[in-house]
Image 1 (spheres, one colour):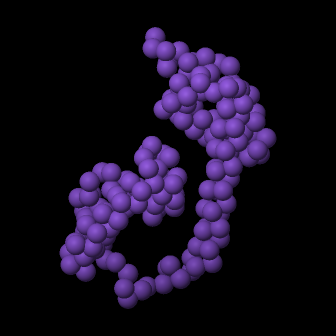
Image 2: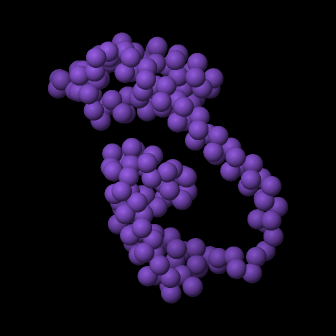
Image 3: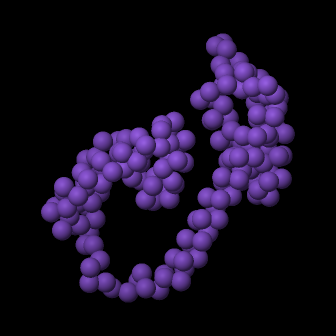
Length: 167
């Protein structure tokens, strides 16, 4: 068994339950706490050796859990605020709009997005539809924030060049 895999197994055995309990104490939400612990072990899987070089393995685990839990709470708060805004606007969504995209335009937009390179398409999706910041996307994809911003900009530029198709 590779050392990284052995380290992850040991960390999971040693900390999974207490990490969950701590995540729950921060979030007061069982599914969210479970997501936090899953995020913790995904983060550790990307860099399991970093924890072995930490002064205190336990302190690093709980710092990561706390940070992940607070990030999850912030994202949930942002989603809830957006949902509240959308709930106020919801009746308007069902009114016919003169500029509403037709089914053909939706299909063209889907095709235009599909034509983008996967790295640009992913960044555009995560930023526009999942409302993640460039920093959060960078952490998720393990890339620099500047790289994420560039991929987003290049993707939008490619979509703009197809604007005549979407019009």
